[in-house]
Image (cartoon, rainbow, N blue to C red; front, side, top):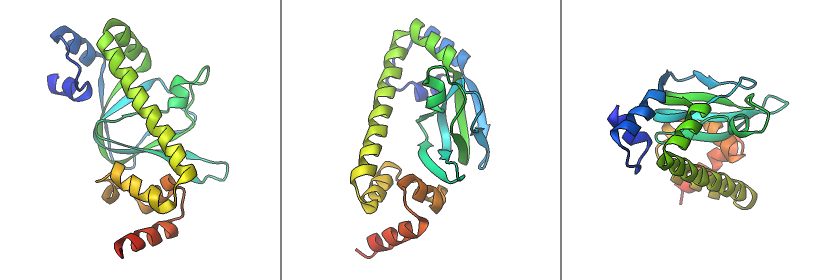
Length: 193
């Protein structure tokens, strides 16, 4: 119990009582590659901490084309945030697929909010994580608007250094907003430098 709480709530000094309370609200979830944590139009009530593995969040447009929004690896949190934090809408707009066997710890938003009220350190931790996530999403939008596909790929490799062996090429291409052929050209160009 203690090691999981320390892993999830890094740098937060908790009393034994606080750690026990946090642990009591967590539920372990195991997923196999290809399993879905969430599908579009499902109700969303939980957030998930990734202890092991890799997941992918994607959206399908009206032509059923997939657009990868996020890869999530060890130490990251994942959910459909539009449904979780949106006002009045609690149905998922995206899919969350396991792309490498994963162990997650889930907590309902309701319980997490209560814990944030009861343990101010956890509230501060949560706000800090949200700030980092918001900054990362905004940075990604700016990169998509201003950087070349090659520069976006190099940033992807820096952000996810060990992910390529677990992720299909079309997932990476979808994340970067390029075709798989363009991704192959970019990789070949980098290899020849």
